[in-house]
Image 1 (cartoon, rainbow, N blue to C red):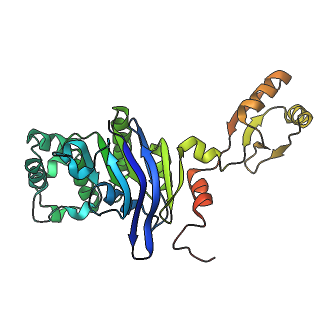
Image 2 (image 1 turned 45 degrees about the horizontal axis):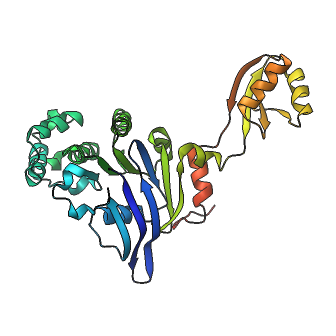
Image 3 (image 1 turned 135 degrees about the horizontal axis):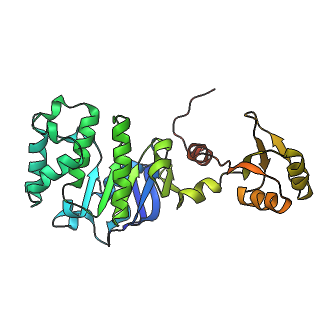
Length: 303
């Protein structure tokens, strides 16, 4: 089983708890966005999961086993925590060859992941000559090297150009579709909304949310519909009978508060009112996230 299991996980530095009693699962077959303000405990949790730090209490396991107990960890878990970790004096190919040799991975995988990451043409260049985006692709290639069932990616779009962002987005969704577990930490709400199916949100080291993307946004949105109609008079009267108000929007459309698009569609069909455009006007992930984490941000600018 490729699931990640976090149970009562705590990491204390003196009196400060960077991670405070966390319990959640990350399941295969979906991309899980790992969100939270700076200092929320995301990076610490990932480091604890990979055995790079020792927990004060609690457990962080993969399929019921600690990362350090795997005899061939790169076959089980691929991770990108810091794109700058590769030795600058090595070529990209040699960097991956060292990792492959250390974990008994066939050398054929080196060229395969270089191609997959789109950097085969620069595989002979030294890493110190790489841009941030190229280093990021190399880090993702390293994470994929052992063909693992679990991927941990910290800010994977950092430094990537638009083509690279689309590539990593499709890669993550493709890996999840294959039944792998994909946990992605990011500060970019627009990107997270484009690739994540599920969200785990931290604040001050504690769990704030563990839910699907849709449920997360819906829980922090007031239902509202945006529409166009060729007969607003009749639609306004029909909505008023059910206690709703048709209001003019700035863009020439109409809005209705407190109702969903399917309800308006049914009402309009019943009354024979033509509707030319109809959609739910939901909060964005960014709006919902800021609403949840407003009291948990370590640093906030004054206005």
